[in-house]
Length: 529
Ligand code: NAP
Image: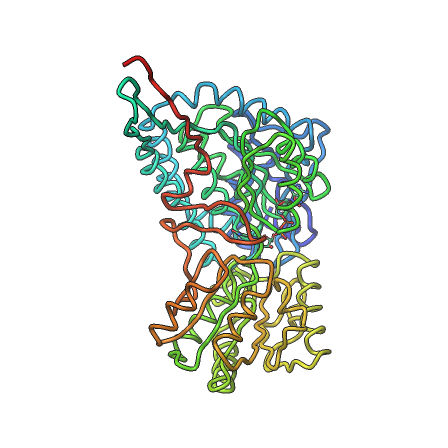
């Protein structure tokens, strides 16, 4: 049996084969294989109770109508973890119908009831967080400690919105006429369609869905093809928590069918709002598609974050910030530093220290290996794009200080890379790199740094390091972004409004602000008083 498991992992046969056995037998099958399981498979094995091979619609675990499936691959090893249904228009429509039907009663639940269910969901995520983190590392590749950080971040939205659910207040408006009383009521908007990315497969779902559920909305969620398991695991926990059928629905699909699912969500009159996190290109498609039904659309899109280090900065603090901001999730977050700009007085010193930190602190490898800080890129397309950015910069005069190549481990791994003498003509400054490449540009004045920082069409996060108080106010106010880190490289949190300006998005998620995306304000005028 041990050999069977080993064979499963090595021959790329799906782990889901195990799921074809009755549930009572699975733990035995899994246990007896322990001694021969490769290290990287360890986490998947113990997370196997969450490896759902079905999607979740109307409280039931279902296959695609056609029976079609897609394989989910561990990006560290290339091993197939299992399969999920490849759904399209029909299944998306049935999820929307279920969500719409469920909304008719869910909207009338009390805030206290919704709060209690979200609290149960929070407790269940907490109880299962080690397994959820392993599942996340297996399907996405990020180091286990980072995955656990994401699950903690994800559960914090269940906890936060359990609390916020009870604080959705309307207004009594002072009346200009004695015979009238004026009220503003807040009501749930309706069915919320959600499309989420692969880089935060757990937290991007809870950040949206927990706010929507707290407000009294029902949800249809389409996770990314690469990372459906974390979404299905959350559905299982929502089911266990007691959310009624149809309130949470997960539609899985392949990349080839995601447009079909997206079209149903955007064009259905039964869906009241679309919440999307992903690339700016996809966001624009969804925005256009939602125009015909005049839907509310919330978009968390791509960034191209400036990370500015002024001469007055605390250099060590700036290096610590740059390491965390650039290399978290192997550079695959929308708020990662993309354009690192350093003032000429400290440029050489910064590059030198940054290179030493990269070489000393970053360890590339499988996310299940305890020493790994840098997991793989999500897929081959991402790997190729990152290398193209490096080659383009080098061909235009940038110098590789460290890294600059595909990693010797092969697969989807890329060397953590530092480029100097980078200019604004290079692709890595114009576009999001979304990988472990740090391009460093030299600038002379604050005006020049701001002009470069604000020269792009995106505006999600921006960071800068300075000890000059007047400069801190000036730059924080002038940066054209939705999120500013001043002497801080990691600024996310459950309490804060997360979102961008320009082509980085519409609306805000998280904090007291996030729930507003799922509420309508209704004005009531009572006459004849
Ligand atoms: P993407 O291609 O836009 O994919 C994101 C999601 O959209 C996936 O679920 C994808 O499904 C789906 N999708 C793609 N095309 C679609 C269509 N025509 N209709 C409906 N759904 C569609 O983005 P990505 O390149 O994977 O993700 C990285 C991007 O997300 C980066 O630009 C990053 O900055 C951004 N991001 C932003 C935030 C934020 O909060 N602002 C957070 C994380 C990531 P499939 O995977 O099945 O194609």
